[in-house]
Image (cartoon, rainbow, N blue to C red; front, side, top):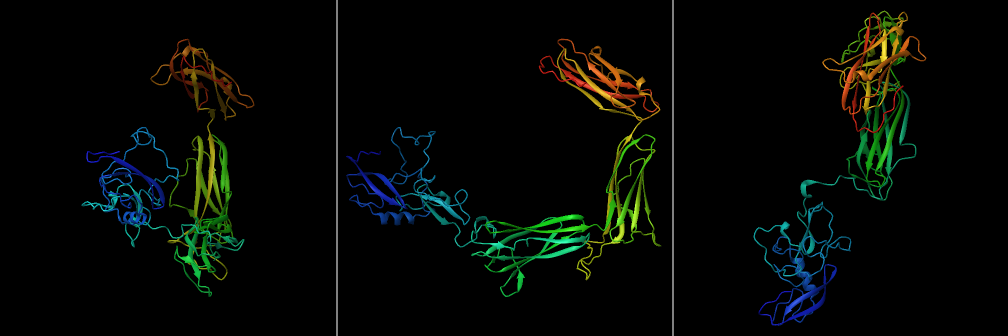
Length: 546
């Protein structure tokens, strides 16, 4: 409430006022000695709704004064601060404001879609005062300087492109009355048997069957498939190129030409084309399938040599044939050379070659023997044929033919070889972890040693505990070892390392090496490292491995 020395008394009037669809009950303070009535109110206290609405809408965001903070008091003047009766919530700083009950919109505002005051068309969300519309705009005022009040939406750039140049993607919005249809079963086409290198073409036929036009936003193929053209009919049997996002009237036919490139595919293959539209479903999936016969094939494609003992030689043969009897020459693929492992050889031998040395049947003879390193061994055999893929992608009278993409290419074939070379002796595991232990805890760990030399007796082996190089073996006297024959294996032993329990108060880490003295001429010693940590506060006892 405001008071001055000029005012002799105050009179309050309660009157209803309709502003932009809201019924507001205003508390108007007027003076007996001729104080001005607020805009839209006659001097006798009656309401002039038309006048108030007309004057309020005449105030633009540019001309609105900025010195008003918060909501204006109905009937107040520019610069007058809003006040609340003492004790009312939501008025003081830090107090919780009461959420409006009309869907989150504050009085005098209208929700306009958009981010932070502007929508996709450039319209700004602005508040203007409900009174004193005759205030003059201050110099340099902009649309962002509007005070709070009645909310209006005025395009910031009427008749121009949206702010920032961002336009919605054509066809991205869903239309419940738009439909892109295809006959049941026609969305998937099976070419049947085909040969590697063939280009398989198909035309999918769809139709706009909704009440409203349909829009195709994108036709996206998966790997190995190409969408060459999307065409739309004119209703008279003629088809023309389609521009993504354009309307396709109801009743018009759509053709999508797709091709399946089989150059790098074999056996059963399926590729998809995803068609995105404004149809309520949004996505139409088309599929191409074929059972592709490779031009040249290796049998078996994966060769497991198994375990190869030291000094032993093992041979595996891979059969290589062209699927339709074409005679070819084979050579190593040197485009990305892979070094052959030591002790392995691969020999290519043609079976019944012709005069030029080519054959429809080859054999790759893989040998692993002397000189092979102990441990895993693996290699990928990659061979090139001299049968070049023709450059013409078009179908031949006899059917589709092999294809070439970006330069001369030849049919290839590959096979993988793996195995394990065993030394005279092998052992597992290679490392022992004693874990986290507490003083007095007993921990047992086992190592299995196998002799692959039938003439060597492993039962005479011995065990020593040694520190790691440059270190001491902590609590050496608290460890013990033992040997016993392995159950179910001939010429194999189990070596056990036992931590008998560390003294009370022990705290710290320990590590060492358990050395198995085998006496074999090629492997006299086997070193197994071990480590652990002792903590006095550990309460959980780890299970032993017996």
